[in-house]
Image 1 (cartoon, each protein chain N blue to C red):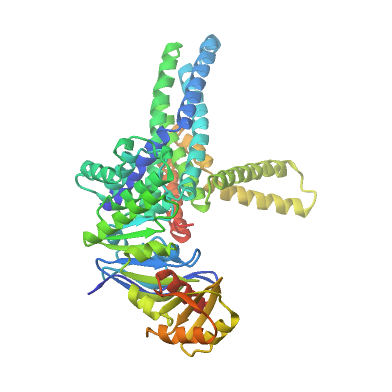
Image 2: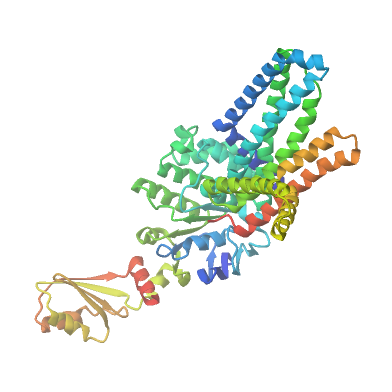
Length: 308
Length: 273
């Protein structure tokens, strides 16, 4: 399937420093792509480059197979962007704000579309209220409504759930999943990994402007060498037990927290019997043992740790 | 086609915003108050003017319009110099550019928005000056129309200069500071020119300084919008058709160049902070 978004050696330099360096990735149609990285990793810069408001120093962005440089205006009409903060015209009412952008995009049935979005975001009763009187959560909703006003094929969201209450987070999540259902493509950046794990089909991990990995969520988790973590609860965790486990060839890391030991194992084989025997030999008594799969957060920490 | 649409929308948005701020009404009130005071003054000294055989209506209209223009020049300079800086500071510039807007349509939209506000102000004030003239028995004539045309040209220069300075800064405070620095620099240059003109050639340094200042003053004639007002006044008063045409052409070229430079700067600087 042809990629909707294609970053080709995308680089942004500020003097000698790199905002992002040599990004290469593609995003297929109809998926939710999570762009994950710590603060200052280059997520916002990447979105600015992909949406045409920042010129790359090197490389190119292809949207729907066309270079963003060659048809900036045409491609901008097909995308919606939600920036990292709800920047709005505070002197306008919600209806005026959406109306302005609807006019800008030449939306047909403008009023119907505005009513539909205001209703979707539960803002109908606030439609004639000036945006300066809106709370941050309400502004974020109107910001997303603005990005959706022209029913874009591709939606970019930069940290959309940052600072939102649980209800707001759920609403944003529903919007994203709703867009996916309609066959739209969503690019979402965040550092809140637990949320991304819930709905992203593919992810890209960025740190210090460099893309460390891009692919499916499974690929990311598989790419971590220690795919399994055993959590062992003991009657008493001793140094002897920990040292004994560390000598095992397949054990990558052992950490202790009180009487609970976490053992990271390379590969995916079931090694619980072997581990139990070694603990017992070292004088330990196992109260409970469970296997935990590596989640997105662990994968992210692992990847960025390797890079650093 | 899309660009014209975007220009119109940006201009309209700018006008709507201005009409929601107290500044525009304050400027209008000040201009109207000035007109009333002027009408009152000239009606009080009407007898003296008539005995001298001077055309009172012309003088009343010209002086009042120029005073009003002074108020509006300041207002338009401040609002133009902050117009882009404010959008950049509030980051609404970034949001706007996520849509189908490019630098040229944005700059032109901003310019037309500012000019539309001024034309509205000018229309209201010209009518008010005429009404005040009639109320105080000073009469009305066509000289206010001539000055109104000049005013549009002058303000066009001021607005385009304001927009240019606005593209250079990232905050409202910074833009106002830049405007003040620019005005002070022009003023100091003029003062220096006058002072050096009266100092005798006591040594070569004075002579060099005078030449340098004169050269700079000559350059500022192309930069300062006020210079175009005097060119315009000459044009209106002149019966020379060529001079009259030049009086219109210069501000138009000035505006065009400054808006083009603003577009280039905005493109180079980018919309994202």
